[in-house]
Length: 153
Image: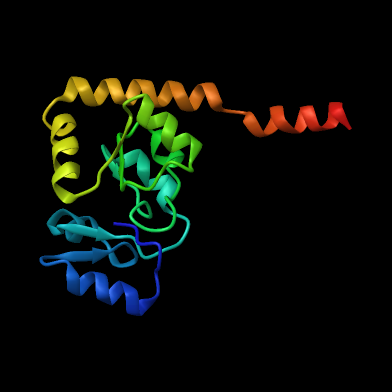
């Protein structure tokens, strides 16, 4: 779990809310991670690098004011799950249309969407392929925009 807020007070709240063995990334060893139920990322800037080790990603923020970055997870082919407020994020809308991202209004909807991919490796691999293709097709957008700005000015 990679919380948006990594203050000591918030990390302690997360640890208290999660029953079972929680290990902070900064204190993790191979032995403690093997026994942990939850690896708590307590450093800023690691999340985009950690997606490569995942098989699924739940992205926060879409039950509140704004969805966090979905492309970091999609760049590694992960199926992406999030809450219902995602419509103002173009890449999230596109990933939902491609059946690579799965918005949920409740824990039940989230579990149902997750189970369809968790128990069907072929379906998960198809999401992976489509996500990777989407990211590949949209790579380099900044350079294309900048070149158009230079041409028109």
